[in-house]
Amino acid sequence: MAMMHKWFVYPRLERAAHWLWGLVLLTLPVTTFRYVPGPLGRTLISPLAIYPLALLVIIMATIFLQKKRLPLPANFKPLLAFLLFALAASFFGLVNEPLTLRGASFEERVLRGWFSLFVGLLFFFSAFWMNRDEQDLRRSLKWIYAGLALTLLWSLVQAIAINTSAIPRAFVNQIQLFFSTRPIPNRRIIGFAYEPAWLADQIVILYLPWLFAAIIARRPLTGRKWLEPALFLISVVVLVFTYSRGGLFSALLCMTLVTVLTGRASLKRIFQWFASPFFHKARAGRKGLALFLRLAIIGSLFLGLLLALNFLSRYQYFASIWELGDEQRPLDYIVDISAGPRLAYALAGLKIYENAPLTGVGIGASGLSLFNYYPEWSLAIPEISRQLTPDSSLIPNIKSFYVRLLAEMGLPGFWLFIVFLLSFLAMIRRMFVSPQPYLRFVAIAGFFGWLGLVLRNLTQDSFTFPIMWVILGLIAGLYPYHPKEFHFGK
Image (cartoon, rainbow, N blue to C red; front, side):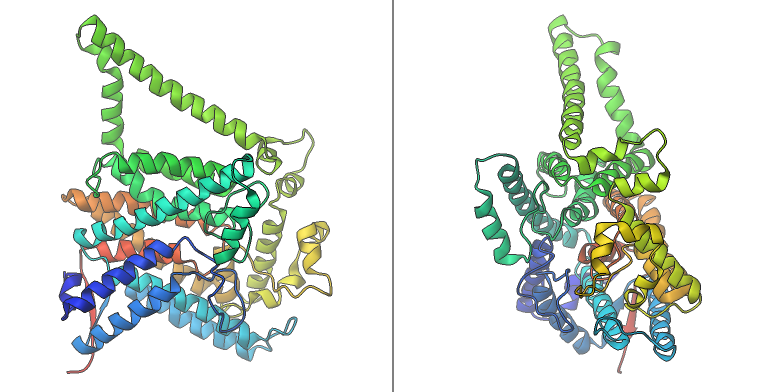
């Protein structure tokens, strides 16, 4: 495998690329930067990281042009097949009498969709190019942890301002609006992101995977054994303050599955450690201290769980999940827990897919016809009724990545992306069975991030989601088998 540092001819160029990539990772938490211009109008996802990313791509493109070769990931073929079919789907949508909605034309929506996908691919390939071995990962993790530390610090400041009077909330909002387009909500924290769910996605998909893998695999790449456990515990606390139901569910499910499937040795060690005072002879004082320590750990975990549940239950948005009426219909329950709009968007997206099951309506164009397929029961929901008012300029979106793929690219485009997504699972499995501990560590983190991403895409639908592309790029770049390169010129 060609090491990343071999691509660079000049040391200054290499240092510049490393610094720019570090700045990309450091600024990833800022999802809606106020000063990112939109070429086709303002968008919710305007990452600050786009600035260092653009400079990094220019440097890498210059290097590849000089060397007349372009490194490609091992799963480039399914990605290319998906992109080609997405292009064909956009063409078919153009010739099938496209709609216009609220001044937005089909061509504009398709260009926005392709620009969104293009930005995501830049994050993917940059992560792939800049992470090719353990040394690269160690360097990246320092920046990832630095970004996490800043995110946790600012999130805790927001939590204090929201729940106490120790920090003026108006002051926190002034700082937030200096770089973002939205102040902090009334009850929930958002960190540097636009909304609480996006902060939860950052924690679950990008940060927790490496922290949890370091704990499970007992392999702290930073050299500080206390750092990953400390950051992990604080991250879980911040996750609770987001009140993100999807984020908390994803984190619990990911930790459970990753532990069961990859952490059996760690579970065995933990069990042996807890059981050791009962099966090994020791002096009475030491045995009593050992028993007290284990009971204190169990009590702390149980108390922390009770406090978290009590805190979450104070907010009706979260508490309504387990408040099911005796004769309440499932649909009424979904509406009561504020999930009705997302269900309506998904059902409308499936109707669009039914009308064009083989080609879809073109990338980015599903919002133009979404209003026509809202189910009748959803029209009374305030979020949807506001969209239907004549003075609204909103173009809706499906809010489910998988349904969006079906609606905009049909069944072939959907399955091509699923094949591309599953190819990362194949990479993870092969790295996990490797005799190298470093690759097993990457596999554990990669599986955690991959699983969190798969769950996230059930309720989010943007192609310009840097965290998704960065974690996939890290997996592809650190995969050591069968590297590919595209050669051009003599």
